[in-house]
Image 1 (tube, rainbow, N blue to C red):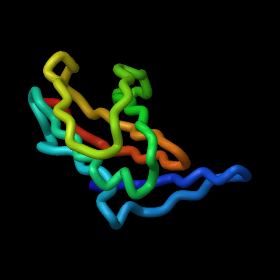
Image 2: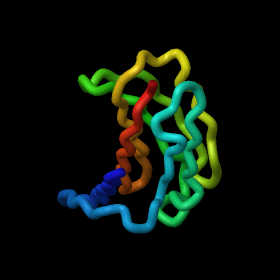
Image 3: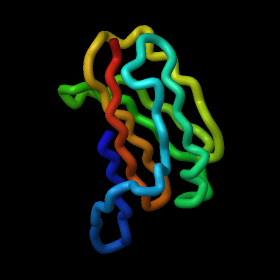
Length: 102
């Protein structure tokens, strides 16, 4: 899985690979419950983070806020089968994880 983190300073942005595994999404593909481990996001931000589920055509399917310190179980059972992206947005961090709903 290819992970990318974008750090956004006040006057621009740049992207770096995510070698630290800041967030993990599993099992992937998933049929009903997807686990999101954001325990390492706390190293990048001290505040809650916004999460967005976006389908393969760019349509925003769901938005929610979570604490950046634990694991969450996401119910994806109502999503149609396909490719999705989970964006995690916090203080100067933008992480995008790709997942497959079967």
